[in-house]
Amino acid sequence: MPQITLPRRIAANMATVLHGQDANLRKIVSAWVTGLHVLLDDFPGTGKTTLAKALARSAEARFSRVQFTPDLLPSDIVGVSIYDVQKQEFRFHQGPVFANVLLADEINRASPRTQSALLEAMAEAQVTVDGVRRALPNPYFVIATQNPLESHGTYPLPEAQLDRFGIRLALGYISAEQECQILDYAQTAHPLDKLQACATLDELIAAREAAARIVVAPALQHYIVALVRATRERKDVLMGASPRASITLFQLARGLAFFDGEDFVTPDHIQEIAVDVLAHRLALEPQARYGGITGSNVVRDILQTIPVPV
Image (cartoon, rainbow, N blue to C red; front, side):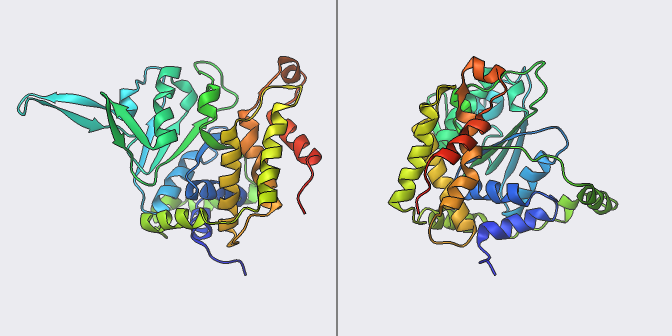
């Protein structure tokens, strides 16, 4: 029997309302434990909002949602200072970014200026308003969503913002049997209404510290670097993955090992998550894009060519 680690317990709790998503829950909870943000690139109605709410509720975390629109301003996200006439001073009113779990819904509908308001928050868990730095709650986690097919009224995420997301996933459609189960559970009330917390934020913070102690052998560290550097040497890649990608792959592999109750990372952990970590960070040559090559194709090909440490 695998050890019932905190991430495994949270994923099992979330699975009671998110059917057929065990593999994705494993990756998302591991990302949460290691402090990495997630981009969900999928069609409407696949459970992205439910996932974010279930994650927050499972650990009694403060949840906030921002619906990104073209007229959304940075101050609508981070907050604003308002003058108090009675006290004759400015008082800061926190924006929705001050939460443990932030759902940035349809993030590509907002302008690049508004999208960039999240860069500091995602990278440093803080925001700067009127020259004052304000720390965000600990832990802090962003789940952003976007529709991969819709292009009207959207702004593609710039490379700098994509690089802030630890992994990019798609939930996808579930089987007919699982969809029937959802209908059965929804006859009386939404499954989220019955979901109970199975952990606390203090436990999550302790889990982050424990995951940071997972051992990654030097040979596997070199393997991670080799995979990332290979993306920069491909002729069909205009811009390869940055050193931040190496760090992310390193951290998330430790998160998966911690999820499994292991004390060390294996090559399987790295290979399991490599496509989700690296593919969205690659900018392909136009000829490659027009030829149907994707970032995922490139990473899978690299995984086949780089020798695996024994």
